[in-house]
Image (cartoon, rainbow, N blue to C red; front, side, top):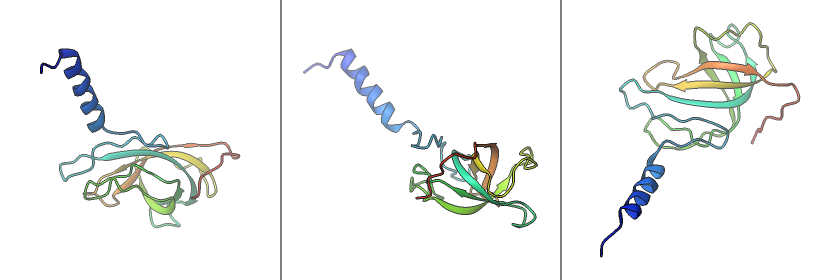
Length: 135
């Protein structure tokens, strides 16, 4: 049985869609996981500032919402529950305008070859009445 070029094109497009990088439910953009070759994964989520450098040993403590498409050290998409954790802060990210209790949307990179492995690369204050999902 002969398969038309159109059907082959549709099948190729379907396969490409299945293996393409996904975008998470919270607007989290997942890049390829770090496999030791310098690649990083990047995620965007929301959270609350719980501690600033100086009172957290050079890191910013953030409670963040669930990250359903988080990729672990082994390259598996395991997701990450909502939790409080420390993040490094990129040199070009200013924390002058944030304080404990501020609600933020932030982007962070994961590079398993670095310490800290998770580093905030940008953040933006959210309105005070923003609801953060804590589950």
